[in-house]
Length: 141
Image 1 (cartoon, one colour):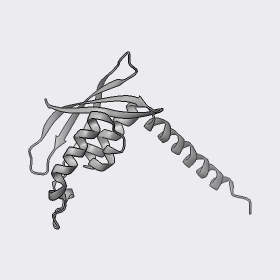
Image 2 (cartoon, helix red, strand yellow):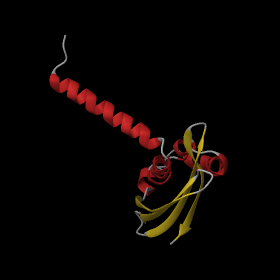
Image 3 (spheres, rainbow, N blue to C red):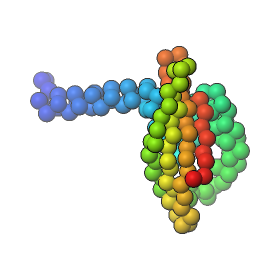
């Protein structure tokens, strides 16, 4: 059976989108954005851990260890406590050692009404051909 023109077009578009996402995730900004999304928006420390190394990985492993008992609470509803977050890249700084640091402004709107702003600094570097988050810090703004 010969695929219809529309099916070919849709398949091609999905392929293009897939490749563009792969190339974006393999860039320094792409991995920093993915980290921010997993860590702050999804509240997914384990997912964020997958794209880290060094000090960033140690920080996340410690957080996971410290929050394990809370996350095991049977009636815990993370969605109920999950804030709305919006973040914007303010600037980036490339270093001579081929690492890149990103500075984000994060706006947090909590369900309990306590809103705030944070500055988040995410450092990235390339290891074995893949960009990884090497460190991250959050500061009150």
